[in-house]
Length: 247
Ligand SMILES: C[S@@+](CC[C@H](N)C(=O)[O-])C[C@H]1O[C@@H](n2cnc3c(N)ncnc32)[C@H](O)[C@@H]1O
Image 1 (cartoon, rainbow, N blue to C red):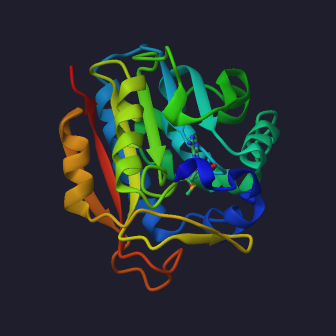
Image 2 (cartoon, rainbow, N blue to C red):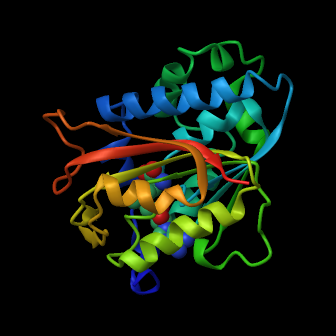
């Protein structure tokens, strides 16, 4: 169960050095899909500023960077104290490794034409919250843009908790809110800093159907199937899902 896992022992430095020192091919594909989804949506609403949330942000800033141009406020929610400390330490001036992720986003106008310095803007609008995604009482529909990357399937081996995490994510989003989510397909769990963390072994069709009843315009894509150097052992591909919270 998620509550039994020692999340405070999650080592962000090890996780970053394994996953986010540079933009790996699978992340480049994910970034392209998410960037196009968000910029195509917000192009229709010039000047609109929304409230974004990245659920289970961990030590990954690129979902927040993908939301940055359209947000007046971004919440990074995570349960682990080490990850929360990492995120708080990024607020003043995030580390140089994230510049390459921002550059990948800048292949689309919505980001390239962004009038602010992303580092300064990140500092102004991002807030970090330590919390449990399963227990955010009273926050229904509070956010108008959302991301959840490698969380629902990577926080427990329980299929019920996988489905519950997806339900909670959409519960926090306002009807009509654009979202992006990413998943490891058929993951057998993963190791961070010598600690093993659980995963729920789900296939693309299961992920798609778990999302379907909360969404409209849902598109799921597989990325990274051909990568020779998989980020982690024990998974087949990554799945990225984009769409809108249904009304
Ligand atoms: C595999 S990591 C994914 C991190 C990041 N989103 C990424 O894209 O790499 C899973 C994250 O979920 C967080 N987490 C686990 N259980 C949680 C819960 N109940 N509520 C909020 N965050 C949780 C962990 O601390 C960890 O940061």
